[in-house]
Amino acid sequence: MPFLVIASFFFGAWTSIVLHESSHALAGHLANLQIREFRVGLGPTVLNTRLLGVDIRVGTIPIAGRVRTFPQLFYSKSANLLLVAAGPAMDVVWLVVLLGAMSIHQDSQLAGSILAPAVIFQIMMVIGNVFPHSPGSTASGHPTICWLSGRLSRKNTIRARCSDRTI
Image (cartoon, rainbow, N blue to C red; front, side, top):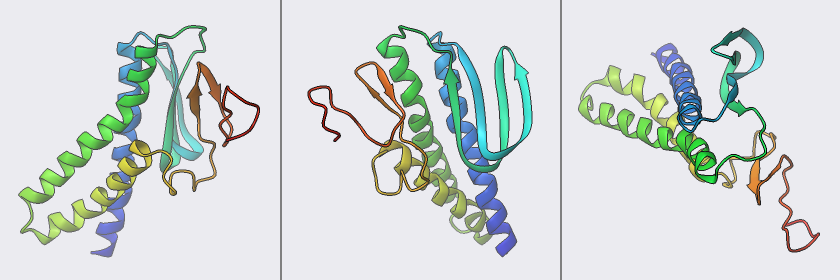
């Protein structure tokens, strides 16, 4: 049974990351943004291919992913909002689906041991993406990317426009 729980957590993590990043890519495509890269997983790349003009990369560790667009001077605010909001929206939808599956199979110990790790990972995804400034969201040490006044800041700091002071 412990192997089943570990395998479920791993499979749940991969499923969650792929759904999250796929929703970003689909939203970007629907908003006519040019998708440059679709990556799921960190660490060494095990799959690197190009499909429909998009670099697709799969890493070994199912912790994170990214969808990058080609840089342009002007993307509409609604297109950016759709691109950014699609991932967390999918996280919430997938969590509801997993919780629904758990409630349907609440009497089955096997289903519970398979679904519980996936639900736990999905709750962590929702908290980390819906509340991006929570204490656990920057624990990975990766920079927090913020859109501010049309400028992308790749540092762990946010600079206010009204002063030179770092907030």
